[in-house]
Length: 299
Image (cartoon, rainbow, N blue to C red):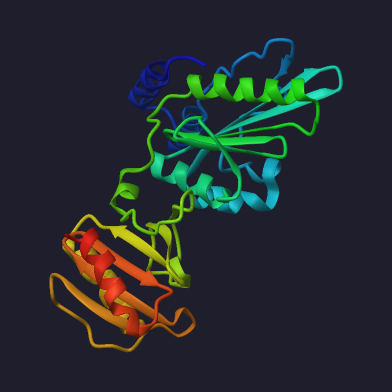
């Protein structure tokens, strides 16, 4: 694909042509935007295997053609494009899928939605796991998936080798999203952190939350951290929640409230600065636990 500056220069020239019809220009710009969004990617070779690029570059317009019903979830997490390759050696086949998302948080979000703490974790990218011939990991703005149905040890090792090549090739940070470091360590269940882009706890006004699960003695609960860009956004979210549970709105810059949220039962809601904290899974008489964790995050 040509350097993007070539296309922008060409568009500038077209705009200067007064006789050009507006509809044609609009159509050209639409096609250009698709071209620029679906960037080329040189997927690595794999020793002993023949690489086959028989798939197109998938975009939000045609992702359903590849993963059908699962496409909606990927689109919710800022999917940009997908590059696919197959590696063949006789009857042995390894498939590589590299999903590009709008940012690191969204790439982590889709990865965390398909990960289980029971998987075998491997040192790839920011975090990765292996299970039943599949190796998945995320790095930067990318979520990579490698899989084979072969049970042969040599093929499984080749799949791992390919995963390492891809991890080295992909740009981006190899650390987890920074917000995850804000969760208190005591009682936090390992490898269960997640990012939820929409409808946290089933509410359409609760979006963009990091989640961690906890087990403290006999008690299991979840903590959600929301980071907003302004105090107004914080108060809009807080008051939307209070309105839903039929409580009076608040105009305090920081506060702590216990809610009765129907199906979600007791919710401990706290806010300060640009952060909102929700804790679910604890009873009303366990406010001391909620206070301890909330205070550590909002200190």
